[in-house]
Length: 343
Image 1 (cartoon, rainbow, N blue to C red):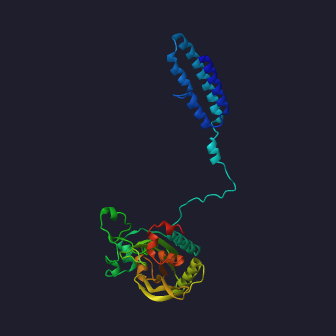
Image 2: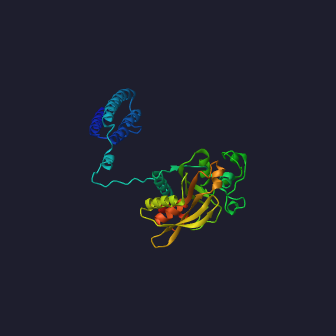
Image 3: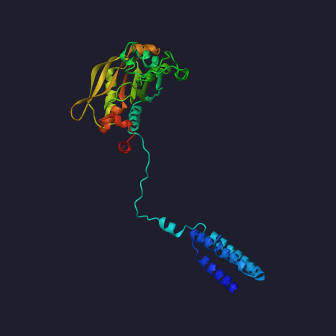
């Protein structure tokens, strides 16, 4: 009677093996017949109920059956090894008429976009990109730029002065005044560049600057500037006006009327403020500029009687505020994804 049960178990197992079509069904089959609590294991567990001579014979037949089923199972497993389960086949079926999913990607910050576009425009006009350290020395940040010792900009209210441990001092290259400061403008790069390059030259300097002041909708303790410098033997403020008008036309993609107002900067003479006329007819202060002061040329070893030049500095944040009609500069630094993902 028991041998008939083994034959029936063998037939049933082979029949189920034939119907297996994917790896998931193969795993279920193994568990049902060859697992620790499977049908074959139950046969061996029942041997304790038989006499010694029957136990031996039934055990031999059960071992034979187990090996046969294992061989058939391994063969079937190889056949369906790379076939996904039925439920996965259904899930992975490609519907070519279904719209695709938009991948979520990172993107550049709006200030980076504006800075790269502005630099690109100046590059097409023959300017090179120059960079410099954010941690500066007093000499490069003030002295070489003709800023008097008693100038208000040097006060703690306007400048982030640092203590002078050796680890900080060692980072300041070409130190002539070893009092370290977080640069208050990108103008020190003008000095560094003119020290190592001979005119004629055209550079723009993008970078972050630091001011020790209260923040509001128009001011931040740190922001980005784009500095410009052109030096040649025959340069005038008319050259500057023409270049800036062309830059603003390309950047804002429309003609922009500008005006130059008298101003004062220690490192330029004459100095002027540049205003741009808005669509509503009002004037917006956009940047400061002027002709390079002779004392700046002397500080870098150039003859001011031979070389002339102009320099300008525009706030990248201000350009972005005008471009995107943003009223508060602080929003650029709040890392609010609801704002940043618009760009």
